[in-house]
Length: 148
Image 1 (cartoon, rainbow, N blue to C red):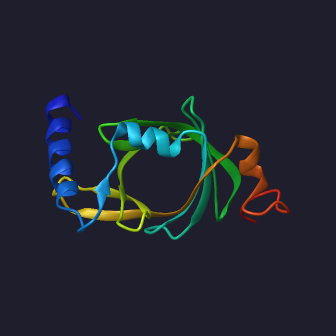
Image 2: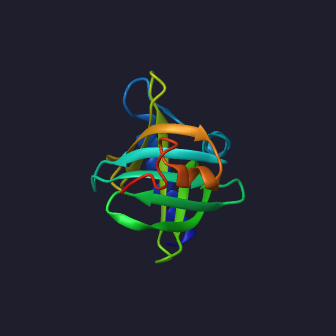
């Protein structure tokens, strides 16, 4: 996508986010970096139905487990244009999405289509300080993998 088209999409995304549900707040790049850096993040992909547990390293590395996939998924992450982005190592695909916080402090990731329509993608259930080694520990200390 060329720069002009990307700017138009970002403008539409910004307008759509501004019109989001009452009380929702769209995070900016600095807030996204603070929320994700060196964190174990858990949630549920609303469209595809899987749960995940991921580690976002401060250096931009990304590691994730999800239900239905035995091996660790790897990639890169960054914050740009008020969206969190992931480039999957296995495919090279890049996905950038806005993250909203509601009035009760819950986070969700949305896709803003070119039409301005918002689609809820992810509901986050936890953001916790951690390391890559903690990703292997799973939600409780007795598990050696978060999902079996």
